[in-house]
Image (cartoon, rainbow, N blue to C red):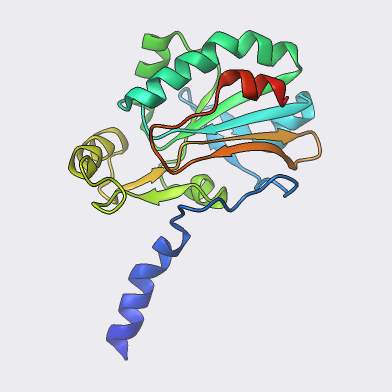
Length: 193
């Protein structure tokens, strides 16, 4: 019996590991408060007090070419996002060192928050486990890079997802795709603000 309980307690944190979208349009977005790369607390509530809507983007890591390209694409339209009285916040498991490096190298002006323990990532249904089933050819490479950039060997990465949250705290639009290569077009993000 003790063995069964021990196995259950070990598996329980991974029940939240997702490949199907959990947070859909019309649902209340989970509240969050995370530190950005400078240690400043960023919260959903505070951002929505100041803006009409919020773009929340989850990304695997700046070591991932697709994420790096998408961060650059979002930066290119960041002034347009702000002109629509919206804010953009990116959430990752990377440490502040790698976030600061990505900001510096990419000239990124929007806040990037750390969710190393994947609480917010999980609350938004974006936690995903690196495995040979999920990434047949790349799971070892992804596991190594994830461990280097997060300081954790748990092999949890976020599904690359983008949510637009309205002033009322509800999801207005979303792009959720477990394929680590897929991101929405920034034009779609702008159109749905």
